[in-house]
Image (cartoon, rainbow, N blue to C red; front, top):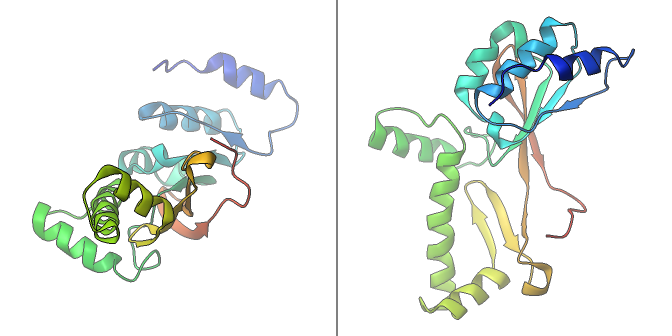
Amino acid sequence: GDNDFSAQLARLQALGEKPDVIFISSYGSDIGVLIRALREVGIDSPVLGGDSYDDPALHENLGEKFGNEVYFVTHTWMGPEAHPDMPKFIELYQAMYDAPPDTSFVATGWDTIMLMAEAVKMAGSTEGDAVAKALEEGEFKLLTGDLSYKNAAEGHAPDKAAVLVELQGGKPAFLGWRRPSNPPAP
């Protein structure tokens, strides 16, 4: 994307007061460039973001100097704090790929397969309507947290907690699980 954020930074500086918080919805290197630019002009407000912040390259790019007061939500935490089976999953992953998982997205891939296998088992069939009904009625205990789905009238919206993470000196720290109490309708 565009790496010249000078107009946006000028508007923030012209506010007179620092914002209480800044939400940055972006991907890839743009996030790091913008957070660094904010900090370099003296805007040290907390920054909030989503799962695109779950990226070791971003954490390394921000480093100890710029990687503070940055909070994001993602799908899980790659440690025992998230789930008692996470260490075993990490061990299996390392054995297969000769490296530890670097993001929670690998665990969501695992859970997708486990979720579908459990739904087929509950349905007693691979027939689409039966599996869909099992998904709609089931409560699933997954590596990335408990999951259920709303009914068709409610858009099959997932009901699942997310993990809140804080960057401290460029290193991610687990803050806990958070479940939306009143999510918007799909």
